[in-house]
Amino acid sequence: MTDHFLQFSAKVKHHLEVVYKDILTPSEIELLVPKLQTSIGVISADDCHYPTPHKNRWDESDIIMITYGDSVVENTEGSEFGFSQKPLKTLRRFINEYCDSIISHVHILPYFPYSSDDGFSIIDYSVVSQSLGDWDDIEAISKEYGLMTDIVINHCSARSKWFENFSQQDGIGSDYFFTASPDDDLSMVVRPRTSDLLKSVDTPNGTKHVWCTFSHDQVDFDFRNPNVFIAFIDIIRLYLDKGTTVFRLDAIAFLWKVPGSQSINLVETHEVVRLLRTLIEHTAPDTIIITETNIPNRENLTYFGNANEAHAIYNFSLPPLLINTLVTGDCSYLKSWMMSMPPAQNGTTYFNFIASHDGVGLRPAEGLLDDQEITELANCMQNFGGKVSWRKTENGQQKPYEMNIALIDALKGTTKGPDQYQLQRFICAHAIMLGLEGIPGIYIHSLLGTPNDDDKVKNTGQNRGINRHRWDFGKLVDALNTTQSTHAKILSGLSMLIRIRRSQPAFHPNATQFTLQLGKAIFGYWRQSIDRKQSIFCLSNITDEIQEVRLSDINLIENNLWYDLVAAASINPATDQFLLAPYQTMWISNKATG
Image (cartoon, rainbow, N blue to C red; front, top):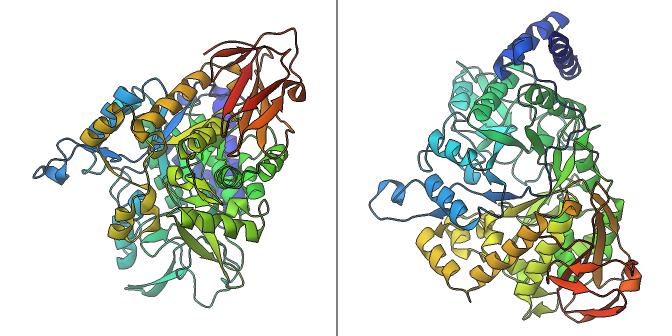
């Protein structure tokens, strides 16, 4: 154990030397090591865990539901905050009654006091927002499900106590924020917004210009100050104590800034992720770190490091490519991307999703779809009631950055217009996602088939509000108990697919995956369990026309018994030809499990 602790200390010191080589002296780095160890709670050999290298901390049963703490509420006029009980209690009730058999983890989006961006401008990292509940509510959920918590590490609210102290140049936080000069060369900085990068702040020491990657209410931290790092390790320790088992590092790619550079994906940022991983896994070795980096695919992959950075990375290219596939009826781009994706090493995996609280990012489609195809996709989404957010390029041009639309509406038709296959297309999208290598994440509003919330866009003035509906629990129960409602059909259909998936070893996040070549109209891939005992051929008709498939095209062994897990029916390999209805999916397995 002593050797492990010494190795841990040496690793922490090495990370710090890389990050702070031009900022701190060797003696200052020496002093910083025990401070970080104390913050994370590993102060002696007895506290130190030795993480197993390349260990998969997940299996095929893992499904993460993404939700706000108040996505489902019980409304009562005149009660505190307008709710008859705190939303976190209502959320837990909803999960227990409707999702208990289909999810393993809950990603509760930032549940702290905030001032804007629906939680991603945190005022106080140490308390649960009173409008949602308290730490007891969070811990109650964490005792029944894995808990995924955001570390909003790049920025905080301009209304936070830390930033108030910065504005007054006194107290904790007075030196926590990144400043630059308007005369600096900031032309290369990559950002997802068109607002001014620098925010002028009058202080007793003169005007300061604070770096704001996202908005002027979201002020960026200065991690060149090691006290900022210590503060965030204290926050991580608190969240571990409250039951967090998965950390989502929000907007981590923008963490380190250097005027005159792109200030994204810098060497120091990657080293900070490695340091966070070292600190976390030596105190809670089964904890998972997921990096949220809404950037082009090749850059996103670098956050695996050498299996020493993120345990999982968001598969950001999947949503735009899959939506494009289903609205064009052509899987060529999705197939090419799949073939280019490296298998994740053991101990790492992909986090797959096709809808979330944010919109559908288009930067991850750059280099995969050309500019014209991205524009056509964005136009199609606008035709279905969606919104498009824009970013400014280095040469001052505006390009579509994000499509804001509820997934059920994104799939209401094709580029030809709306049609009668909305439900089938929506289920097909999830069937494809659920079978892929990686851990699936499903947004609560996808489980419920929630449509565009145009009223919320009008009320908030934010495009992202279109996919952030708040359900009244009573109305939701009525909708789910009406078997012919779209909401009930979607929850039932997705629940069936999820239950099947959770019992298939071939759907382990790290099981083998090969892309099949079945033309433009049939998207297919093959999964094989780690012990090689189960194979599943996943075939989806991604068009609005019946498609013919030949079993000989996927080389089914004739002397084996094969089953379509989705239809719960046997397949006779001697019958070479069969038909796939529009947007039908088959999971053809050599084992009739699930």
